[in-house]
Length: 418
Image (tube, rainbow, N blue to C red):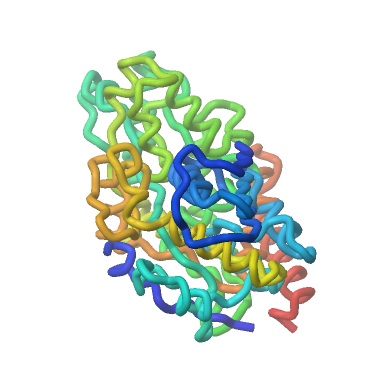
């Protein structure tokens, strides 16, 4: 199987809390009279806003629940595999939709879009081999976030490369301002693998042989990516292998970090007074994508987030789920609070200053995260095997060999390789 993505281009991009909601505070006429809507997804503010809008459809015979958690990717396939499924929709991104397609747990949305898709823009439809498999609602990317006051006090320019991040970090440490001035979502597993994906692309690497599922990361670019990650980790909290996006944001809000590569969707909260000192939130600034080496390729990836409908859901539950989520991403979602939560792919969206990092990443022509059916297997192999190098327990070559062996075994088991 080698499915291809259509319907979403860069120009289109331009253009755990658990909630149970059976009676929303502001009920909406979503045209639904019956059905169960059960959403699984990540927990950042933009997705929380979408889930809250979907909950407005809860009334009478319509039940809306949402489980928004950082563990969503470990729960969604199992939760959509039963009949009836625990979750009637998973909110996913470029990478995570592949696992749902590979395990055949989501349904084509062609008929539901034709019947109830008014208001959904054509560029929001994620079409795979002729079938609409998801509806995208926002673009996302990782980019530089920095403390303007710290850089200004030391006379440092805003870094544009990882090499400049290292130089700035050394000066911040030497000045006694911060011992660990660099932050990063380096938690072993998915987050650590994503950082390698960013850095490897930034070094000009290619993950697979052309037209093949054969992995090709054990090379000069792979070694350089790992070495840069190790160099950065020397300026991070010693517990960096446990720090996901939430923990890294907490470090930022505590005033312990001055430079980090962070998701655009998680930046707005860093500029708000709740949870951080005035010198932190008033001096938090957004930069563009960081470069590394001399490839000319940004060391980051472009993402979209969207929603799906479970294959095993009854027709009534599938329709209720589609209509509730279609209601959730209508222009009524946008207000003074939500405009800054994301780069929305919704009619009426107006970019805000906090969105400039994602927009700069799009303008820099960063590559989309590879949406290949076997990329998830490589992502898992990376997440499982990189930590020993960063802990000094294995060489870069040994780690890359281990990643390739783990991926190849999994790819053969799934039939992607002979």
